[in-house]
Length: 117
Image 1: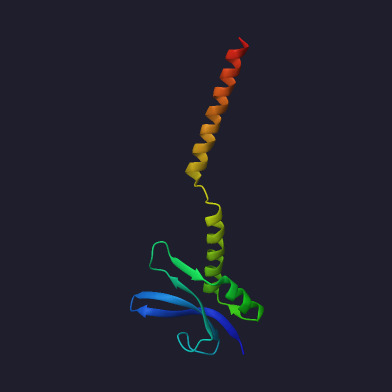
Image 2: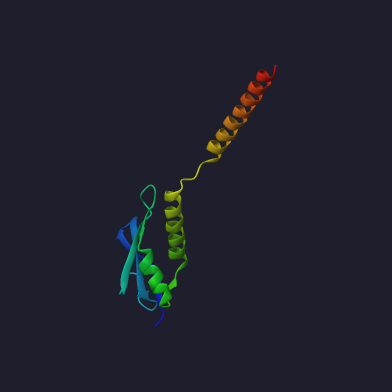
C-alpha cells in the first residue's frame, strides 16, 4: 500500500483551508484518510501552518511519501521555527547598523587623534 502525506481541501467555495493528512494514494483527495497531521490556511495573513512534525517524521520512517505541496509546508514550518529562535534582519536594518558602526569607528579615531595632541 502506497501511503502519501498530502493536502485535503476543506472549506466553502473560494474560501479553502487544507488539512495535512496521511492517506492511501489510491483514495480520493478529500476521501478516506489514515490520520490528520496538520492544518494549513492560505487565506490568513501571514499564512497559518500548524503541523505535527514528529508525526510526519514518524510516517516518513514508515515509508510515507510527501507531496510537493506538503514538502514545501514542512520546509516553511522548519524555517519558521528557526526564524522564531533567531529573528532575521532586513537589508535596511543591516545597512543602518553598518552605517552606525562606521560612524562610531570614525568618532573613536577622532577621539584618539585629539588625545595624542
